[in-house]
Length: 107
Image (cartoon, rainbow, N blue to C red):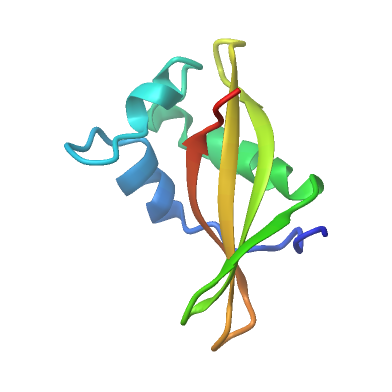
């Protein structure tokens, strides 16, 4: 299944979560391997949107909506490629598709 190309990716998810060092559930060091930093937030946003061209797989139904995952890769500013899984949700209340998070893909 393809998710809509205009899915919502909150800028705050990138600038205040993914690219910021956190004590718990840090993603910034993983993304830094490919050269993603706050300076490259716009590129990460664009690269995440490209994931929507790939097929999404339903994973779970929550009280808030249906969650899907997309397995893909990101090629960062330094040319290194990361294998990732992005998580998306179609909200029950609004029927909008929203980016939730990304995780490293385990081979």
